[in-house]
Length: 484
Image 1 (cartoon, rainbow, N blue to C red):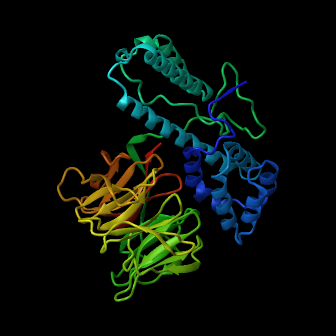
Image 2: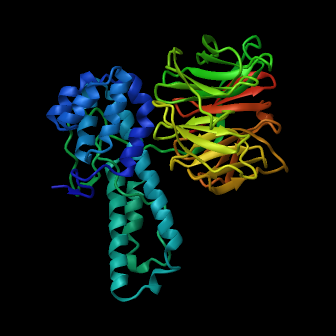
Image 3: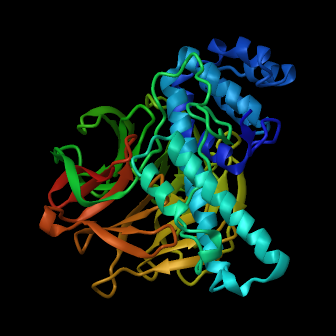
């Protein structure tokens, strides 16, 4: 019988929870909970009380969000049963969840093994006695797990890896193992971490093909997939752009700076609906909510909320945020809202409109132009107080700072974060896009003036993970494939 590294009756791991949170934009608009509610009861995905609470919600999206919140408190077996249930009605959602789960698992494994390398002694021979034997045993287990994982996933490198490992004993290791070694993936088309020695995994009825590990790497030469001029009667300048779960865009900008507007557009920037006709500032999207920050002269600012079809839901106002600006949603679906005059960042419950938390004011900089949220739920801001990209935590403490390369005083105009954790920053005045590591270190320039890029003012990521860039010289929308 297969050895289980993570027992099914164990609580959901952070990896499982992050996977659900990352899949919210796909699940909420597409899943009707009524389709799987009988299975939820039969397979104990939720308790009877939980099911009653979920079904008491008024709309399909509210029922779905309630189910996902409650699923985070359930054991791994319930998560696996939920994925199995999706295959009966929504197999594309189940496939997406498992792909994301595998990505999250390997990303965390790589980070942990990287940390092991950082803190390990310079050579294993410096360890003596019982500690040496324990360390050797653990390294052998990691080696065997990585080998099993590659065999299960039918990777081409399996034979090479096995051959190399067989020639190297743990006694011969003189340096920490490389951080690319990974622990086991989710079960083939499933979600329990396991190793199956010398046998194949049982194939369940919904399996269609062998599951392969997603390989995400930055392309040496990114590919421009779209280069669409924007009609200047719609926008002469784009301030902010976000992607709706339907694949549409919500864009704020102006033809005349006095009348800044927010529009719901299709992927060719054809207008589908006017959201805000005047005084719009930033835009942000959640699973089923569109937010637009607004500020008219001499009037307290507000955030207008819409559904994904552009229907107005309600407004949020708060005396603690007189001038709302840059916005983003975090993994808890809180609205993160910057007030760059007070130099604070607030966290808002969009259901109640209440400010849950606000960072201390009085920072020397923190004049926030754009906001993103990392996979660790830290906040990434473009700070035009000192022309930098900063990572800060919920308390407002600065964790890192990036001030560009190649020219002093580069002003970052927009920021977004991809599924791997890369930070992507646009520099309007220098006509380029920088790719940063999750730690805020420069990796490469993705696109520049030599590629036809002029004055990038706003960036986001579409549902395929490609970079969407709006420029203002001339006004265009680019879609850039930069990872495979």
